[in-house]
Amino acid sequence: MIRVKLGKNVLEANDDMAGKLKEQYKKHNIKVINLIGSPGSGKTSILERTLPEISKKFNVAVIEGDILTSRDADRIKRLNVPAVQIQTGGSCHLDAGMVGRALGKVELSRLDLIIIENVGNLVCPACFDLGEDAKVVVASVAEGSDKPAKYPVIFNRAKVCILNKMDLLPYSNFSLDEFYKDIKHVNPGLRVFEVSSLKEQGLGGWLEWLEGLVADGGKEN
Ligand SMILES: Nc1nc2c(ncn2[C@@H]2O[C@H](COP(=O)(O)OP(=O)(O)OP(=O)(O)O)[C@@H](O)[C@H]2O)c(=O)[nH]1
Ligand SMILES: [Mg+2]
Image (cartoon, rainbow, N blue to C red):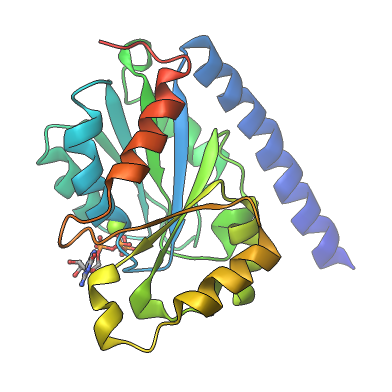
């Protein structure tokens, strides 16, 4: 009983803070993506393919969430894209307070888009609003096709799913039929883009969707 109450209070406090973040994003006309997926599903690899393209049209910054290390932020900075690393020190998700503090380290007035790469986890990040315009869930062929059925909350709350590592399809028992059947059940409106970030394949639809989101109110160069 007490555990339920505490959980509710934590989420309510987070929602209050997320509301403040939303106001900040709106004031500066910035679109925000919350990228969520299992460890190793390819979130940073997708960013490494996405950022060089989206940066041609829009000013982007990345907020990276990890338990330890700044390795993902270092990968993003190599692309000359501003990146702030949040080290949660153990927490399995980012919360709105952490993101609020990270925002102090980016130049909001010149940005059109912030992409937040959440801590690798399909469970907790789904419940913590970061004030984003869209949650994007990254699944991968290597994880198996049953993930939408087993982790329905994130697949339900996401606007887009990137199914990564499609190059591994011939070498795995991943069933596209099962994957899409479960998605239809959990979130029939979910847009799915099948990609291989390794082989740079299938990224066009995703980039088009992202550019469309930012152009809808962005400060185009
Ligand atoms: N075969 C294949 N491997 C990929 C693909 N995308 C990423 N990888 C590999 O998967 C591994 C994990 O990729 P990351 O991009 O670091 O994954 P991540 O989701 O950011 O991982 P965390 O931040 O630790 O949660 C790396 O070895 C990548 O090279 C892909 O499309 N195909
Ligand atoms: Mg990563």
